Image 1 (cartoon, rainbow, N blue to C red):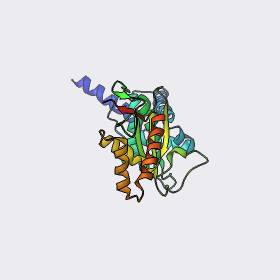
Image 2 (cartoon, helix red, strand yellow):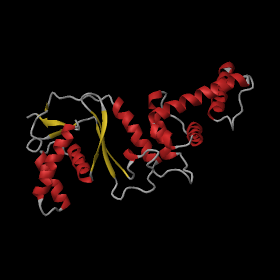
Image 3 (cartoon, one colour):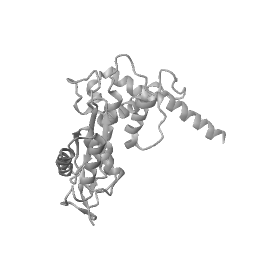
Image 4 (tube, helix red, strand yellow):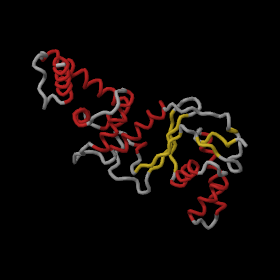
Length: 255
């Protein structure tokens, strides 16, 4: 038992030094050359994997700031999964709950990280598109539209899909940003920028999956208190067709 406790203590000391070498000294029985190999290997693996998931964040930050962010993640965050593929989600949790922004940080950093993570999450989502109960060429207004389980409707304050090194917004969008990230029948991940009305349409579709496209448009027209409901209905018909072309709507439910 004593040997087991000593071994566990050595493991904790080893891990603590790798996570935060500035605070925790290396174990006395491990030479510096070997310890440096483990330190660099662990940090570089984490940094490389997260850079692959968050390439835009990696590009817009200096190398020093990126390294600082990765180190802070390693020091502060206690991961709840041993799966390497779920590390980006742990990084999101760190940014949302433990990260302390500096005066020079971008206001959109957390939203951009979430958007980049969603692209990965949709690509590996285990859900399957089942068309056995779907009429892929059904009338979307007369029938009941079926939303793909691989379509994620998102809203952000910043235009996260446009951010790049030469486009770094300092203020949120006046009316917000609405997107759908989806995986097509060919397993390709894409995104579609939508407006608040379309975002509301997708929300209602998921909440009330038994309503026809026409009744959904009538509900939206009533919510908007639109003086000409037929305008909303006609525009909604075109919107449903656009969502269908992107595999966000699969078709209509078979009767």
